[in-house]
Length: 276
Image 1 (cartoon, rainbow, N blue to C red):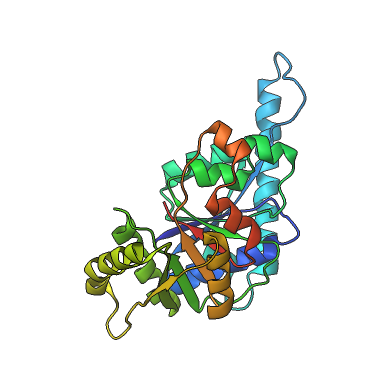
Image 2: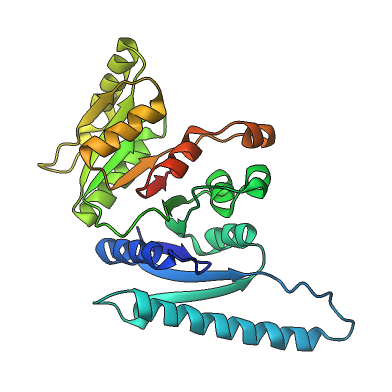
């Protein structure tokens, strides 16, 4: 991992989210960029004022960059200096501008805060986090407002039986080595046939890439529902970070049906790493 993007709207728990981003950068050797995307002014443009508008925007960007640097100095913690980070201030829609940054700057990971109780507007149009889950092509780390910073010592990958499992496992293996964290896989199985299938694929794909002297175990869990099983697993094993793959939905599905990923994001207090 070479480049991490931390997005902030300066929420009450932004310092906690930033601390996760800063320490991920420190332990993986990645370069961290702090970014704030601020909205366009509500006033209508006036004919002949293009130069004044450009000067106003330039001053706004300068002020926002200074604010980001002050934020970093206040919240990075010991061992960090302002020059350890890059800073970006952009005017526009937070989702569209983030997607543009992701494409132009080729970030490996986006780190953002997440809400746990979406309002009516978010249920219809989706929060920034939900839109990025569905539209971004970059891995996303979502930190809950329920979470105080905790060193990542145990990572669980919610293992799906699909073609992307191998590349996810390679990426997570590298991440866990950088963090010196334990990596486990968990699969929620409905029956013995699925248990056998998951175990067989795991043996074929993952044993060859397991770090030397660090076997990655596969935990098979059953329960009344997948969500309940996964939550119980995390609580009982002391997992600090859950990695999982989202499943995309259409517009009507977004309104009327809660995805499994969205359910975990809202209900779990630990950071969720959404794999892309």
